[in-house]
Image: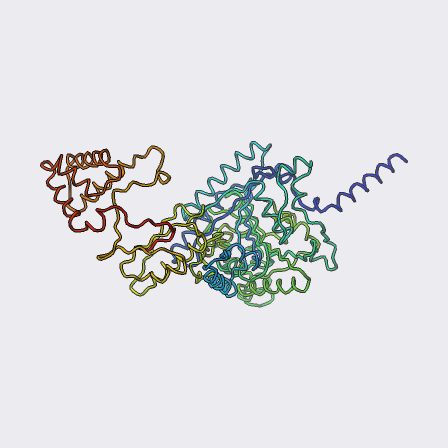
Length: 616
């Protein structure tokens, strides 16, 4: 008996030590480097970053298409899978934002312009919502015997899900282990960077929980409806009363409430057969209740019309759902709607909670705190892929898929590239538009400016030139200006003005070979010049035959053999000497170039541009 007693005491002591660890308040087993998570038992999950699309500004038909595809993606999940949508709203500190977007000072003449542009960006930051980031994540989980089967199953599920969303050009990219850790770190340790990686974990024999677990967690606060996590206070609320008419704007307005939060929607589908059975059983029970009430009313001499209106409405809703499910094949989903809010003090926390409740009241939704279950609620708010509140029917609602998909995660698409050029303000979100044309975010750096007369094309071009020059002084900028409109930019941007006009001493040799450092491996500079002349002559005289093309190429090759640095004058001499009789049309074109623009393109270069900013 004594030995048993000692073992029992030792076990209790170990349990107390384990419970005191913040790592053990994170309810998942392991997170692998490829992004696969072993949640618990036979449940595995993957998290995907959901890209933004322009939903709010789209026309009604486009919005219906987006919701329809999103609905199809969710509805195709089987009862063995689980769907979790996470909208993470975090602060973007002004200092960090300006560090990422402002023009760094170079201690040169351009600093005056840089300061002016930085002032514009800062003013726009203060006036807009640039201090808030909204990130969207979808977590899919499934049951599997081992990691290999889980990977295969999740790959099939995610591919089918992504295919439905790609129909409306909504990208969905899988997160690896480090990306998932960074996402959870933003929730569990707000404002603190994530240190370490999987190599550090392996060397130190630790787990992924050690990287993201807060130093302090206390779920035993007075009232049992909030908790403290390091130097922050948090509370998880659930949607107790759903509005009768759901709106696709509720999530959008919650993300615009200017509070740090995680909006989470959990949904586990029933099979179509089970959905139909549940709805019919509920309809049968409700009809029995209505009949009993009608009989009681008749016995007491009351009219059967006096039965509670809510019961009548519930009966009508059920009948509509049964007809809808039979017609569309949509399923019922066991769902939970959660909002986790945090702030630096209790007073600030409850102020933010009031904002959330105010948005809910606007749409007829009632949010309430979870009593004694904040730890389970916090884990349900993490993008893990499991609802730890599913044991209590009070927190669950059986909703058909359209009632889940109407809570659209899509609002508007902001373009805010790191180190991007300021192009203006998004009129919908009020955020700055920052585009880095040379960055990896863009497929290529090509651009064009189109507008009606007086629409600001010249202003936009000047802004592009100034911003590019100030951001990257090594960038090469060439301006061809017939109207002499851009001359004022030359001096402040340390540019070089090259005048090519009647009476000037400047000329351009169109046969000058390109510098070898700008050539691709295997390129022939003479062949490139030959192709250029063929293109120039064909544009001037119209169609030229294959034989004439061959003669132009032959003349070009011969010219470069006879002269080290030829001009069009030498090229014309070779043409007259060897091929004049056979190339009369080419001769006419060459004479046109020779006589009309002789002063500009038929001489050796009279100006050597040494600066990156050249104005012609």
